[in-house]
Image (cartoon, rainbow over all chains, first blue to last red; front, side, top):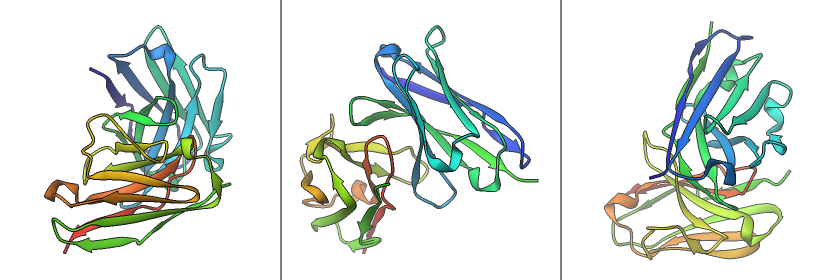
Length: 117
Length: 105
């Protein structure tokens, strides 16, 4: 059974940092791109970043470029999102999703990030 | 950057009725890149349709996707009580549409 479990969310002050993790199981982790999507309270979905199978390919939404870094660790079957210089508008539930060739076919349950003083 | 505009914002329908949801792109999108997701309150999104028209595993055949270029449609032929939710289109690897809420009339 495919499972994605996010962790690392919490309350952080503006300008602070957080590192989100997504532990994957039930599939060949190294065969899939992985994606982070976020959802601000009461708002729609926003694609944030994705990373290729070997980690060499990465892309980000413009609003997080230079502040967020996506990475993956094949030994731990995990994908990470390092978030620096956080802003109030980064407050959201962050979902990790498996990319299965043009489809995000499995999603985690999300982790809440709150940026507030 | 391609913008996806979904309409209507809210659709008020009764169980058994047909739902037609639109997703319009600001530029042409390859059909392979267009997917639809359903999200219920407090839950993660669920993949419904990929490649514009292919149902994901386990999705009932009352859900169908169509369209090409800049105009795509998600149709629910007969609404079941469990179908009421928010639906999003997405160009793979990038932006989502703003969503359409299908609510019980």
